[in-house]
Image (cartoon, rainbow, N blue to C red; front, side):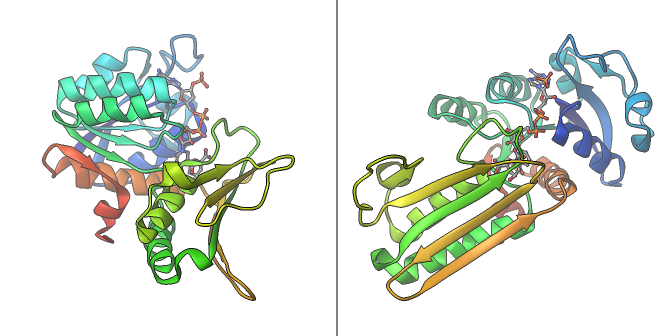
Length: 267
Ligand SMILES: NC(=O)C1=CN([C@@H]2O[C@H](COP(=O)(O)OP(=O)(O)OC[C@H]3O[C@@H](n4cnc5c(N)ncnc54)[C@H](OP(=O)(O)O)[C@@H]3O)[C@@H](O)[C@H]2O)C=CC1
Ligand SMILES: O=C(O)C1=N[C@H](C(=O)O)C[C@H](O)C1
């Protein structure tokens, strides 16, 4: 059984993760963190999330909560994830990262931390989306530039980053399939007189509204025909259970950076 700490336990995903760890016999919850001014700090999880039946006390000191963990599951925000990565590297704890919106320098920091510990990072921890990335890579490789690739995503009104981590995973998969660099061919947020579409571009469109958990499509638009690969998530527990599986898997690996395709053995 592995000891797990959840950072950002008060968040939409943090609450799901507390439930997912509590219901999984492969792990034991040993820590849960929140920001210092959060009303949950100092309370037991049992008080705020009765279904967890956990006497873990929510704390503001991530350093302590991470020091007693074999694995840390972190769905927070980029600046917090950077700090948690340093603490996981110091403690030798496996770091499972679901946080999206990470920039180049954040990713470089994670790579440096992964010299000391195991990092499993994914923009989406569901089986369906990770399978979709494998399919997207294959379809992009088979079709070539005569088919325009557009990635569409829709999420709830509270989401703060765009394109979503999943959309970027799909875009990367399409770019890999074509043997091109996504950063050089990416087109996001078209508006106004944009000019004609650049041949070979990979486009992104982000919709926000309501309580949508997460919907993605990879569209291959050719002349006279169009292929659409898609995924709809309707329950956040999907991501939470996937992240718990990643923590258990990551704990048995050597240091380095991995993703959910590695965990699921889909590569
Ligand atoms: N990879 C995947 O499968 C999935 C990834 N995500 C990603 O996970 C992230 C979180 O999403 P979601 O749960 O919806 O967002 P929320 O805003 O609901 O949750 C984030 C939580 O982290 C807390 N937090 C921020 N900084 C710290 C810190 N330093 N220490 C402790 N807690 C902190 C926030 O506190 P406060 O509210 O007080 O600021 C908040 O409670 C996003 O990046 C999202 O895109 C989401 C779903 C699936
Ligand atoms: O913020 C969310 O909610 C989600 N974020 C992830 C992303 O950015 O792709 C995964 C999921 O779609 C939900």
